[in-house]
Amino acid sequence: MNMLVCVKQVPDTTAVKIDPVTNTLIRDGVPSILNPFDGYALEAAARVKDKNPDAKLVVVAMGPEQAKAVLKESLAVAADKAYLVSGREFGGSDTLATSKIIATAIKKIEEIEGKFDVIFCGKQAIDGDTAQVGPEIAEHLGLPQVTYGLECELDGDMMKVKKEMEDGAAIIGVKMPCLLTFTKPAWDPRYPTIKRKMAANKAVIPTLGFADLGLDAMECGLKGSPTKVKKSFCPEKKAAGLKITEEDPAVAAKTLYAKLSEAGIM
Image 1 (cartoon, rainbow, N blue to C red):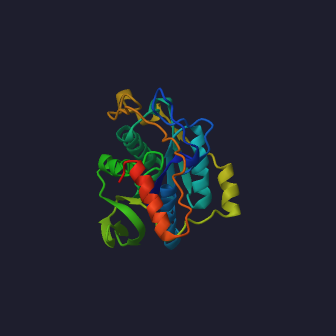
Image 2 (cartoon, rainbow, N blue to C red):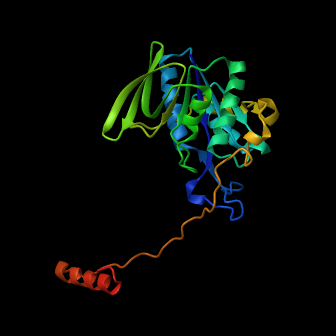
Image 3 (tube, helix red, strand yellow):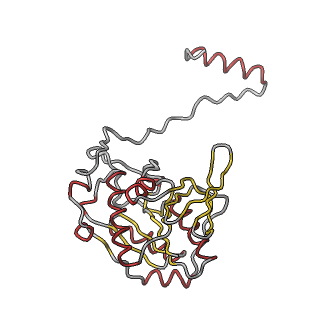
């Protein structure tokens, strides 16, 4: 069995800044982490590998050179091999361009690693929250997909997926090859062992660039992105609201009513 997990390095959400000119996230000098939902996808794939020791688990990330940090983190947790997709031509890509680049990279990696039976993705990245890239990759590759997965297991030539629903969960069977996206499950991802962490730190991670993928420049970056961001901003922190300190509930209610009336709310 051959599995691929798509991971992304994202800014720590407590330190997000936006370039006022380009309306894109400022990533330089900002602490970065493995996208949490990708961590759940990696753990789901690792659990399949636990029950199928002969399975191969590959991870891929698109981003700058520093994104190798999350690939090494993934190797330390469970992955066998890792690939970075990186190039200036890819900068500024929206979800459509990003999914096109990653789908093309997957085909290239398959030439080396063999066809993937299952592709795992997080349901969304916390720096964009679009939940579009995983499903778009599936469309580019012509694969059936199940989104909002909680857990999965191999069942013959199918993957049996527990999918989060509005009113609970459903069990869905999907024939391989397929793509699955994962949301937060009931369990936490595993920690890496010291042995795997040491091996991951020494790992040499190949980089696939623009020239390696054979893409048209008009399919990448801002040129290949039909989405245009008109404006983006970080909301200003507001001062704390009014605090009612009266101990008598009746007095507190009258005080609150008076304040709301003065503000024109009531």
